[in-house]
Length: 250
Ligand code: MG
Ligand code: MG
Figure 1: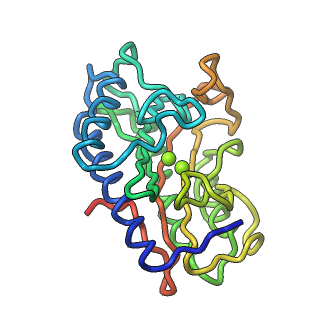
Figure 2: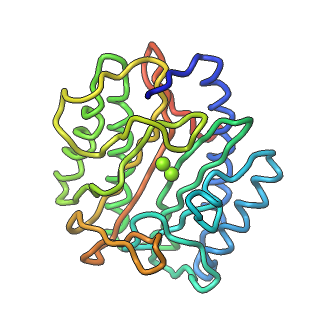
Protein backbone atom coordinates (compact mmCIF):
# COMPACT_ATOMS: atom_id res chain seq x y z
CA UNK A 1 0.00 0.00 0.00
CA UNK A 2 1.28 3.46 -0.91
CA UNK A 3 0.40 6.18 1.57
CA UNK A 4 -0.16 9.69 0.26
CA UNK A 5 0.94 12.47 2.62
CA UNK A 6 -0.97 15.69 3.19
CA UNK A 7 0.76 19.05 2.83
CA UNK A 8 0.87 19.28 6.62
CA UNK A 9 2.49 15.87 6.87
CA UNK A 10 5.00 16.82 4.18
CA UNK A 11 5.89 19.89 6.25
CA UNK A 12 6.55 17.61 9.22
CA UNK A 13 8.71 15.37 7.05
CA UNK A 14 10.61 18.45 5.92
CA UNK A 15 11.55 19.12 9.55
CA UNK A 16 12.97 15.59 9.82
CA UNK A 17 14.72 16.07 6.48
CA UNK A 18 16.32 19.32 7.65
CA UNK A 19 17.83 17.50 10.64
CA UNK A 20 19.25 14.83 8.31
CA UNK A 21 20.74 17.49 6.02
CA UNK A 22 22.27 19.44 8.91
CA UNK A 23 23.96 16.38 10.39
CA UNK A 24 25.16 15.12 6.99
CA UNK A 25 26.78 18.53 6.52
CA UNK A 26 28.37 18.31 9.99
CA UNK A 27 29.80 14.90 9.07
CA UNK A 28 31.03 16.19 5.70
CA UNK A 29 32.92 18.97 7.49
CA UNK A 30 34.61 16.41 9.77
CA UNK A 31 35.74 14.17 6.88
CA UNK A 32 39.54 14.36 6.55
CA UNK A 33 42.50 12.00 6.35
CA UNK A 34 43.01 10.31 9.73
CA UNK A 35 39.34 10.45 10.83
CA UNK A 36 37.70 7.05 11.39
CA UNK A 37 34.24 6.10 10.21
CA UNK A 38 33.49 5.50 13.89
CA UNK A 39 34.26 9.21 14.59
CA UNK A 40 31.63 10.17 12.01
CA UNK A 41 29.06 7.91 13.62
CA UNK A 42 29.80 9.34 17.09
CA UNK A 43 29.35 12.89 15.77
CA UNK A 44 26.03 11.92 14.18
CA UNK A 45 24.73 10.29 17.36
CA UNK A 46 25.55 13.30 19.55
CA UNK A 47 24.04 15.75 17.03
CA UNK A 48 20.87 13.61 16.76
CA UNK A 49 20.36 13.98 20.51
CA UNK A 50 21.03 17.74 20.43
CA UNK A 51 18.47 18.21 17.67
CA UNK A 52 15.80 16.13 19.42
CA UNK A 53 15.59 13.38 16.80
CA UNK A 54 16.21 9.63 16.85
CA UNK A 55 18.50 7.57 14.63
CA UNK A 56 16.59 5.72 11.91
CA UNK A 57 19.18 3.06 11.12
CA UNK A 58 20.44 1.97 14.56
CA UNK A 59 18.80 -1.35 15.34
CA UNK A 60 17.10 -1.52 11.92
CA UNK A 61 17.24 -5.26 11.16
CA UNK A 62 20.05 -5.24 13.73
CA UNK A 63 22.25 -2.57 12.06
CA UNK A 64 24.67 -1.54 14.84
CA UNK A 65 25.23 2.18 14.11
CA UNK A 66 23.51 5.48 13.28
CA UNK A 67 25.15 5.94 9.87
CA UNK A 68 26.01 3.63 6.98
CA UNK A 69 29.51 4.58 5.84
CA UNK A 70 30.84 2.99 2.68
CA UNK A 71 34.36 3.78 1.45
CA UNK A 72 35.65 3.44 -2.15
CA UNK A 73 34.54 0.02 -3.52
CA UNK A 74 31.95 -0.28 -0.75
CA UNK A 75 28.54 0.48 -2.26
CA UNK A 76 26.21 0.80 0.72
CA UNK A 77 25.60 -0.41 4.29
CA UNK A 78 29.20 -0.12 5.52
CA UNK A 79 29.45 -0.41 9.31
CA UNK A 80 31.34 2.40 11.09
CA UNK A 81 34.53 1.13 12.71
CA UNK A 82 37.37 2.46 14.84
CA UNK A 83 39.67 0.52 12.51
CA UNK A 84 38.46 2.21 9.34
CA UNK A 85 40.73 5.24 9.00
CA UNK A 86 39.99 7.56 6.07
CA UNK A 87 42.95 8.18 3.76
CA UNK A 88 43.68 11.03 1.39
CA UNK A 89 42.08 10.15 -1.96
CA UNK A 90 39.25 7.98 -0.56
CA UNK A 91 35.65 8.65 -1.40
CA UNK A 92 33.27 8.07 1.49
CA UNK A 93 29.56 7.42 1.09
CA UNK A 94 27.63 8.62 4.11
CA UNK A 95 24.02 7.43 4.26
CA UNK A 96 21.97 8.74 7.15
CA UNK A 97 18.41 8.90 8.43
CA UNK A 98 16.48 10.10 11.44
CA UNK A 99 12.99 10.12 12.76
CA UNK A 100 11.51 13.30 14.19
CA UNK A 101 8.01 13.25 15.73
CA UNK A 102 7.41 9.92 14.02
CA UNK A 103 8.44 10.99 10.52
CA UNK A 104 11.50 9.71 8.69
CA UNK A 105 14.10 11.46 6.57
CA UNK A 106 16.82 9.67 4.59
CA UNK A 107 19.69 11.13 2.58
CA UNK A 108 23.19 10.23 1.43
CA UNK A 109 26.24 11.96 0.01
CA UNK A 110 29.59 10.74 -1.23
CA UNK A 111 32.37 12.95 0.07
CA UNK A 112 35.99 13.22 -1.10
CA UNK A 113 38.72 12.75 1.50
CA UNK A 114 41.28 15.45 0.77
CA UNK A 115 42.35 15.49 -2.85
CA UNK A 116 40.93 12.62 -4.90
CA UNK A 117 41.78 11.24 -8.36
CA UNK A 118 39.94 12.79 -11.34
CA UNK A 119 38.19 9.42 -11.98
CA UNK A 120 36.78 9.41 -8.44
CA UNK A 121 35.74 13.02 -8.69
CA UNK A 122 33.97 12.40 -12.01
CA UNK A 123 32.08 9.38 -10.62
CA UNK A 124 30.81 11.45 -7.70
CA UNK A 125 29.84 14.37 -9.93
CA UNK A 126 27.95 12.15 -12.39
CA UNK A 127 26.16 10.25 -9.60
CA UNK A 128 25.06 13.49 -7.95
CA UNK A 129 23.85 14.84 -11.28
CA UNK A 130 21.95 11.59 -11.95
CA UNK A 131 20.10 12.10 -8.67
CA UNK A 132 19.10 15.60 -9.80
CA UNK A 133 17.86 14.19 -13.12
CA UNK A 134 15.89 11.50 -11.27
CA UNK A 135 14.35 14.10 -8.97
CA UNK A 136 13.29 16.19 -11.98
CA UNK A 137 11.21 13.21 -13.17
CA UNK A 138 9.54 12.79 -9.77
CA UNK A 139 6.28 14.52 -10.62
CA UNK A 140 2.60 13.81 -11.01
CA UNK A 141 1.80 12.48 -14.47
CA UNK A 142 5.07 10.61 -14.77
CA UNK A 143 5.63 6.90 -14.12
CA UNK A 144 7.99 5.45 -11.56
CA UNK A 145 10.44 4.07 -14.14
CA UNK A 146 10.84 7.57 -15.59
CA UNK A 147 12.99 8.26 -12.54
CA UNK A 148 15.25 5.24 -13.02
CA UNK A 149 15.38 5.71 -16.76
CA UNK A 150 16.73 9.25 -16.38
CA UNK A 151 19.38 8.04 -13.94
CA UNK A 152 20.42 4.99 -15.96
CA UNK A 153 20.48 6.78 -19.29
CA UNK A 154 22.72 9.52 -17.91
CA UNK A 155 25.27 7.42 -16.00
CA UNK A 156 25.61 4.73 -18.67
CA UNK A 157 26.61 7.50 -21.08
CA UNK A 158 29.79 7.81 -19.02
CA UNK A 159 30.43 4.04 -19.05
CA UNK A 160 29.23 3.65 -15.46
CA UNK A 161 26.71 1.08 -14.26
CA UNK A 162 23.63 1.09 -12.04
CA UNK A 163 23.43 -1.25 -9.04
CA UNK A 164 20.33 -3.44 -9.33
CA UNK A 165 20.22 -5.17 -5.94
CA UNK A 166 19.43 -2.01 -3.98
CA UNK A 167 16.81 0.57 -4.89
CA UNK A 168 15.10 3.68 -3.56
CA UNK A 169 11.85 3.52 -1.66
CA UNK A 170 8.78 5.24 -0.34
CA UNK A 171 9.26 6.87 3.06
CA UNK A 172 7.05 8.41 5.72
CA UNK A 173 6.01 6.94 9.06
CA UNK A 174 8.39 4.09 8.17
CA UNK A 175 11.91 4.23 6.75
CA UNK A 176 11.05 1.88 3.91
CA UNK A 177 7.56 2.07 2.46
CA UNK A 178 6.16 1.08 -0.91
CA UNK A 179 6.88 1.61 -3.72
CA UNK A 180 10.40 0.52 -4.61
CA UNK A 181 12.18 3.09 -6.77
CA UNK A 182 14.70 1.38 -9.09
CA UNK A 183 17.55 3.43 -10.54
CA UNK A 184 17.03 1.80 -13.95
CA UNK A 185 14.16 0.82 -16.20
CA UNK A 186 12.07 1.71 -19.25
CA UNK A 187 10.70 5.22 -19.69
CA UNK A 188 6.93 5.60 -19.35
CA UNK A 189 6.38 2.35 -17.45
CA UNK A 190 5.29 1.40 -13.96
CA UNK A 191 3.31 3.02 -11.21
CA UNK A 192 1.69 6.40 -11.96
CA UNK A 193 3.21 9.06 -9.69
CA UNK A 194 0.78 11.15 -7.66
CA UNK A 195 0.99 14.30 -5.55
CA UNK A 196 1.44 13.32 -1.90
CA UNK A 197 3.88 10.51 -2.58
CA UNK A 198 7.22 10.85 -0.80
CA UNK A 199 10.12 8.88 -2.27
CA UNK A 200 13.75 8.37 -1.27
CA UNK A 201 15.65 8.40 -4.54
CA UNK A 202 19.14 6.99 -4.25
CA UNK A 203 21.31 6.10 -7.23
CA UNK A 204 24.19 3.75 -6.40
CA UNK A 205 26.57 3.97 -9.35
CA UNK A 206 29.63 1.82 -10.03
CA UNK A 207 32.63 2.80 -12.12
CA UNK A 208 32.87 -0.81 -13.34
CA UNK A 209 30.32 -3.60 -13.56
CA UNK A 210 26.97 -3.41 -11.74
CA UNK A 211 27.43 -6.57 -9.66
CA UNK A 212 27.75 -6.31 -5.91
CA UNK A 213 28.40 -8.77 -3.12
CA UNK A 214 27.81 -8.60 0.61
CA UNK A 215 30.83 -9.13 2.84
CA UNK A 216 31.01 -11.63 5.70
CA UNK A 217 29.83 -8.97 8.20
CA UNK A 218 26.40 -9.51 6.64
CA UNK A 219 25.99 -5.81 5.81
CA UNK A 220 28.72 -4.18 3.73
CA UNK A 221 27.96 -4.38 0.02
CA UNK A 222 31.00 -3.99 -2.25
CA UNK A 223 31.42 -3.96 -6.02
CA UNK A 224 32.24 -7.48 -7.19
CA UNK A 225 35.08 -6.15 -9.37
CA UNK A 226 36.20 -3.80 -6.55
CA UNK A 227 35.67 -0.73 -8.74
CA UNK A 228 34.70 2.54 -7.07
CA UNK A 229 31.05 3.21 -6.23
CA UNK A 230 29.21 6.41 -5.36
CA UNK A 231 25.84 7.03 -3.72
CA UNK A 232 23.66 10.13 -3.40
CA UNK A 233 20.15 10.23 -1.96
CA UNK A 234 17.38 12.68 -1.19
CA UNK A 235 13.92 12.33 0.28
CA UNK A 236 11.58 13.96 -2.24
CA UNK A 237 7.89 14.89 -1.94
CA UNK A 238 5.67 15.15 -5.00
CA UNK A 239 3.73 18.41 -4.70
CA UNK A 240 1.02 19.37 -7.22
CA UNK A 241 3.51 21.78 -8.83
CA UNK A 242 6.43 19.32 -8.90
CA UNK A 243 9.15 17.69 -6.81
CA UNK A 244 10.30 19.16 -3.50
CA UNK A 245 13.50 17.94 -1.83
CA UNK A 246 12.80 17.46 1.88
CA UNK A 247 16.43 16.73 2.83
CA UNK A 248 17.86 19.98 1.45
CA UNK A 249 20.24 21.89 3.70
CA UNK A 250 18.35 24.90 5.13
MG1 MG B 1 19.71 6.33 2.92
MG1 MG C 1 17.19 5.13 1.52
